[in-house]
Image (tube, rainbow, N blue to C red; front, side, top):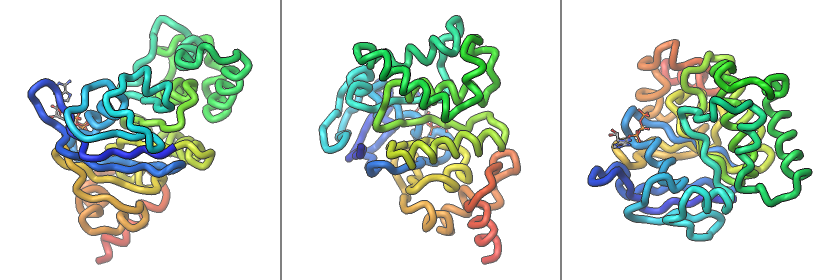
Length: 260
Ligand SMILES: Nc1ncnc2c1ncn2[C@@H]1O[C@H](COP(=O)(O)OP(=O)(O)OP(=O)(O)O)[C@@H](O)[C@H]1O
């Protein structure tokens, strides 16, 4: 399902953070949003999923105007949000957390919910043997997998994710992004906000660069990865080892930039 954002403005009370932002995620595409700290990436996702009010512009899902819808209504329309802090219910088991993810689908047949759950567990096999554990006993990577799996339980057609790689070891970042790539290949539309530009470029189809509440650059990931403005700010020498962990095509692009 496609997502289209036109002239979106939003903020917190009198603080305006997004200033007329345009973004598009075509059906079955993985779109990454990168940008400096405070650019408004999290705010964008919050506005998209109805967690904060929109003060201008529009959001459409598959051509249907959903501007101003609250989170539950958006979930029913097919949009799920995986928040950055991986909010899980700590006193419930992993299994119950997954079950709660299907809350908006609770009237659907149990067999259908089981099928969706089995698919989520097939994507993240590490969760299967941990279903009876408390989420707090999972590793950071497994908690992120749980957060994504829980989002999938709503059977979304658009999944928006806030910093899925934050705080994870390089191998896990690769694992998480590979899973996002598989979801895209299965036809899901994804919008991932990401600090780790290399991880984002390695998997995304299209990348948006945000600065101070606006999109300043966007394009096909392969093309943008060799754009000097991107390599200098996000993929070049400014990136330390700790923030550039993923193997894949993006580091090559950075190397190329180094040869210029
Ligand atoms: N709950 C809030 N109340 C008031 N202001 C907020 C709130 N959340 C964020 N802001 C402000 O909105 C601006 C954008 O923040 P946001 O978290 O969207 O940026 P970001 O691009 O996601 O940054 P980061 O990469 O550091 O997470 C910042 O100036 C921030 O201080």
